[in-house]
Length: 565
Ligand SMILES: Cc1ncc(COP(=O)(O)O)c(C=O)c1O
Image (cartoon, rainbow, N blue to C red):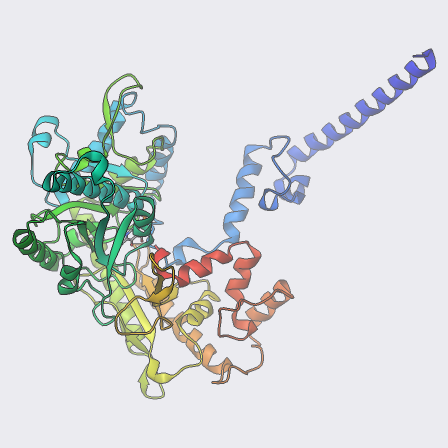
C-alpha cells in the first residue's frame, strides 16, 4: 500500500469515527428526552419484523412501549367474556413479583416456598372435604398439585384415571403391560366440555363419549351418560359449572348412578369434577351446603379448579386434588432427585414461577371463607341485576331475550341468554356482541356448536336446537360492581336500539352514520369485511380492528364457544 493510500484510509477512519460520535451524541441527546419527544417513539417494532434489536433501550422506554401496546387492547376490566381475575391489590402485586424469581420446580432448593404450595393444596382439599388418608397422615400433605390452570389440572387428572383404569383392566383380563396399551380408553362427559378436554382426547389418545344436553337444562343427562359407560371407560367428568351458562352438572346423581353401575357390571369407573370455575364458588354458596358435589361423594376421585378464575389469583394458576395418592396421583408422580434432594413432581411441565401459588395463598389469607362468601354474594347480586335488566327488555310487545342460565342459586355468577328467536331479528347474538363492543364492553357471543373431536365436523352442542343458533354470555367477575352491571345493561339496550334502527330485515340499510363508526371507518379504510357476520360493513368493526391487530383468530375462537374461558 502506498503512503497516499494510507492517508486515505486514515481519513475515512476519521470520517467514520465522526459519524459514530454524531450518532452517539444523538442517542445520548435522545436518552435525555421524554420518550414521546425522542426518536425511540418513531421506531416501528411491529410484529418483530425489524428482527432482534441490536441495542438495548432504557427501562422506562421499554415499559412505555409495552404499556402502549396494552393500551391499544380491550380493557380487561370491561371484559365479561373471560373468567380470568383482574383484581389485584398493591400488596399482592409485590407478592407476585417476589414469586417471579423463584422457580417452584426447584422444590428442594426452595423447600420453604414450596410449603406455600402444600398449604394451598391442603386448604383446597379441606374446602372440598377430602378425607384424610394414610399418605396425609404420614406426610401432612394431601395428594394434589399447583398447575398452570385448569387445563393442566384436567390433563393430570385424566391421565391418572387412564393409568388407574389400565392397571385394573390388566388384572381383570390377565393382560401384560404390552397388551394393555392396545386397549382403547374412553371418557364420558357432556358436549359442553371446555377445550381443555379436547387436549386430553388428542394428546392422551382417549375417546370422548359425549352426551348432548338439552339447551333448556344445559346439564349432563345422567341416564344418557350411563348408556356410554363400558369396561373401557376410565371415568365420567362432571363440569361445575359449564362455561357457556354456568350450570352445575348433577354430580351427586352421577355418583349414585356410578355406584350402581360399578356394582352391577363389576366396573371401576370414578368421577373427575372439572370445577374450573365452581371450585371457588360452590363452597361459598349457602344453597350448595346440602348438595354434595365434592369428596363427600365416594366416587369423586379428583377435583380441579382454576385459581386464576374465581379463586382470584393471577393468570397461570390452577389446582388439582386427588382423593388419595394410592392408585391415583401416584400414576402421574415423577420423583425428582437431581436438584439436591428427593421430591414428587406432579406437573406436565417443569419450571414455572412461584407467583401463582404465592398470590393464591395471599388471596386465601386475605379473604378467608367469609371474604370469598361475601364476594360470591356480590357477584350473584350483580348477575341478578343484569339478568333482570335483560328480562325486562321487550320488542314489539315480546321478550327480547330467552334467558339460558340457571338464575340466582346453585350455579356460577354468569348471565347467558339468546335473542328471542320468535322476533325473527335480522341480527344475531354475535352481532350484538360487536355492537356492544362499540362502547368498550366485551361479552362472548357464539354459536351453539362445536367441532366434533372424532369427525371434525361442526355439530350442535345440544340435542334440541340447531347448530347455527347463537347465544351470548356475561361472566360476572369480582370487579363487576352493581354500578358497572347497570351500565352494561344500558349499553346492551342502546346497542339493540342501534341495531334496530340501522338494520332492516333485508340487511339493506345504508351504512350507519354513528360518529364512532365514521371515525373508525376512516381509520380502517378499505379493509375487507369478515364474511362471518350478517351485518353490513359498518357493523363489522370489531373483527376488522382485530384483523388489523393480527388477532382475527380470536373472533373465530369466541364463536366456537369451547375455547372461550
Ligand atoms: C369447565 C372448564 N374447564 C377447563 C377450563 C380451562 O381452564 P384454564 O383456562 O384455567 O386452563 C375452563 C376455562 O374456562 C372451564 O370453564
